[in-house]
Length: 88
Image (cartoon, rainbow, N blue to C red; front, side):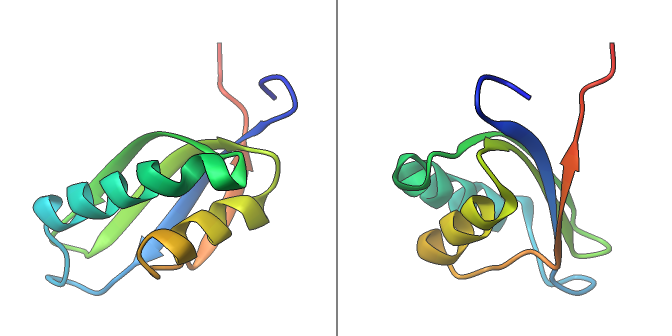
């Protein structure tokens, strides 16, 4: 937990061959443009173009805030959101 926020990894499964790093970079910029409205801070993301999987790391008060940010930004909702803790 960072302040009043937790760390989350959310996973998008878009389908094999249906995602490019360039497309994800554009979606990430859209997330950054609206994240403050939902008290979210997107930290990083990873893309597996071959498998069509995208994972995003964020700080947020809860998983609903993460989903709401993605929904408002570009409509690509994650299939699940995991609360995680950083290892030392």
